[in-house]
Amino acid sequence: MAKQTTTPVKFKYSHAIKKGQSRKYKGVGRTQELRDADEMEKTKTEYRIGLSTIVNDGILDKGIAVYKHWFNFVVLALELEQQGAVLIYKKKEHEIKVDRSMYEGWDLDTIVSKKFNDWFFKENHRDLFIRDISRVLKPKEKVSVSEDKVSIEFDANRRLADVIADLRRINNEQNIFRGNSDGFKSNYIVNGRVIEATLKNRYNALVLKLENNLSNEEILTHKNNYIRATSKSIDGYKSQQEQTGTDESKSEDEFGKVIKDDGIDTRSELEKSMYGELPSDYSEIEVNEKEVDIAKPTWAYTIHELIHGSPSTTGAKQILLSVCDGYFLKHPTKDYSE
Image 1 (cartoon, rainbow, N blue to C red):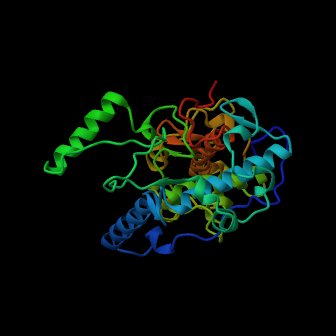
Image 2 (image 1 turned 180 degrees about the horizontal axis):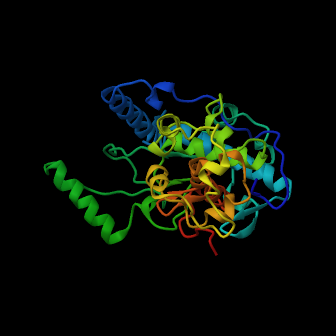
Image 3 (image 1 turned 45 degrees about the horizontal axis):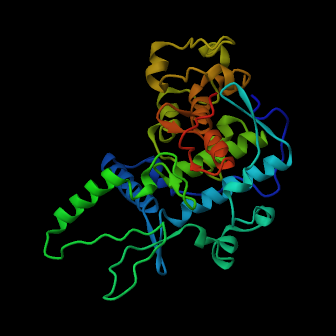
């Protein structure tokens, strides 16, 4: 198998997350109407997880599950750092080193052995992520002098839509709400759109490939459901194989070698239309994985996308490197290609 780090690594605390979505999301044996309904409900659930969450007198920018994933990536980074790991990403070597100055209050010296719920709730580390909820000042109440607070006066007789328009105009002119600013680092803001199941898939794929005990096919079809169906690229594996006969019994000779050492895609037009295009740097990552599933490029393609991302997605390795620098999901200015 292709290497993910320059030397092998082992984990004591970082492990792939088992179980997940119900099998109904795989769509097997269900009508299109039911599959559409499943997909809609799944999308609504994932959307809610990505929204702000009210906690006591404050507000979390995202759902608690998102912060659990941040926690998991931090623990993973620290375990890799302890082993002196060097990550291979974009044909470059990246030493895993966590910037502790960006994690003030996280207690990184003890976090590795902690359970998330204990760390987040019992030890009150959730306060790291909580923001104050907007409110109306009471008469004669003192205006805060904190640089993190903004006081704006509105005419109560105006329409709400006009007030909102004023807020947008004021922010455009003065940039008072800094959370949306590029490069702004407040107390641990999540950067980027979050779909919890996709984030879990990326984390699991990276951990399992780093452990290097399972093939791509075993990762994607494992009984522990490590990779949840979130898109057609994953959802369609079994149904495609059943319809086309591209199952484990197919020999390498029937399809020929799909990828040569120079990374040239030698598949037929039918196979390309069925499985989709391969990433331009496919050979860099998977060319050494000459297993039986070489006849099924979707295994390697999907794992590659989960770990390395695509022009429109952030892969697990980029997330990990961003976490090392103190950002989640992605660094606001670096993509680690240089």
